[in-house]
Length: 85
Image (cartoon, rainbow, N blue to C red):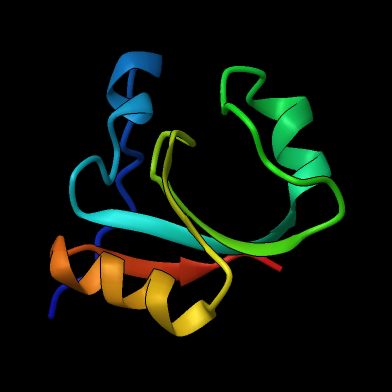
């Protein structure tokens, strides 16, 4: 493998689409946080701890009460997951 020291410049539009359709991130969230960030989420009980799978651009893909189910959803959609702590 050859290493180069070239700087790669991306436009903000290109950066916004980086990982689109192939990368998702998994994060434990509270339902209170989701209600604040996504006001159109609909009815959800306050105080729940959930696992959220987000697209690379931050859009929610799915919510689950179990981490393994959220990961299964990513696998079903051929998404590489990264964890956000």
